[in-house]
Length: 78
Image 1: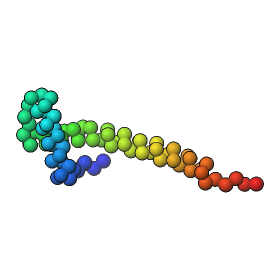
Image 2: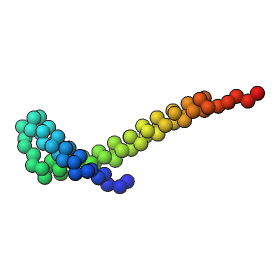
Image 3: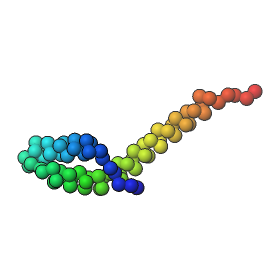
Image 4: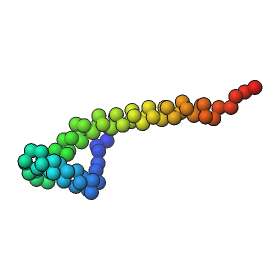
């Protein structure tokens, strides 16, 4: 799997969210660098698991739709 890349805007928003979370929950101020490192760690460790679960969820959803398709478009033969 290729490395997860975030846009600068998305990365900045997530770094800011981490900084806010640490400030409010742990009374600790994170620098941009430290918040970025935590974000990178989370992407490396959680990213593949979340990605694989999303693929499995989409596959299951599409399979239900494909199974239903046969009933929707099948024409009975007399």
